[in-house]
Length: 110
Image (cartoon, rainbow, N blue to C red):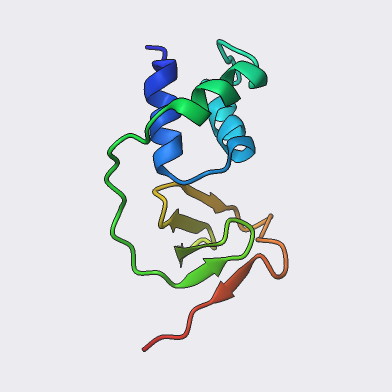
């Protein structure tokens, strides 16, 4: 089932992205098949209210210097790095492609 354009824009806005990163997320979440172009998306994004989103509770271990938010990074026994950002976004890195130097700063544990 195809995601609803307005609901998707509201969910992305709730994550706190600027309009350019929001457009990227929209493209990704529509499986590279957007219904509209960037100019139309920006107009909707500017006017839409953020969706009420439940953000995950994370044990922040790092600060993502690219996104400017904290995240929880874990590494499994195979060297796969899994990441959950405080915005709710998820991702990771395979062992053959580690994060670029300086992208993440470890947080001091209390």
